[in-house]
Image (cartoon, rainbow, N blue to C red; front, side, top):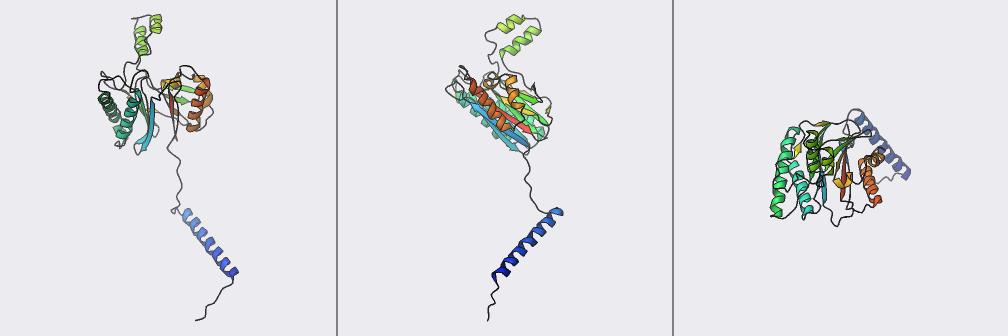
Length: 285
């Protein structure tokens, strides 16, 4: 049998023709709604930053996760001055994230927050075995334009909206009680401001008398470009709102904003700077 050898130029032209035909077929399929896969932007952009400050140990801990029910961020601040702060914060965050994996719909979020807080409190107490320890905790869950949240202690959730800082939760510290007593006329404003124990926590995880965490009665409705900030006290005590606005007002992605906020704290070199942690969520509304 005789083998016919084609000139190299003919082979090259045939190869080019095949490529052109394949490209035309792909374009036609795309025009008809064919199987051309496009990568979708994330439903929630996430950024985080952390510094140990002037402490010997990092007692802050955080984590984020995404499921069909929504995107969750949890931040816990182990109580400074008490032993086992790191254990308490890690246990709290791990418990919330683990239990959130079983949440399948938005209506399950409120029961989840309540149950996770009780479980975390019990787990911490068992590990403490009578020793001192405890942690704050804030959890934010984004479902579309709805923000569900839970909080215990003095870590905070704040909405940054067009230069305005909107507080979401109240702090569980003695100062909150003193302010309420001042408004009711039980004590004077000077007595409320001058109390040396005003920053003392009155509710936290790992507390024998813990009953529940604050949970939103109705979800907070988000608007486009809103940023959800989860902050430990080392963050909001280390920076003023003006300093935070200088960073957040530039409209950069959450991961860049979080890094720059932490850098701003570290540049101050404050003598008593606490652990500072921030998690930023920005839904794509």
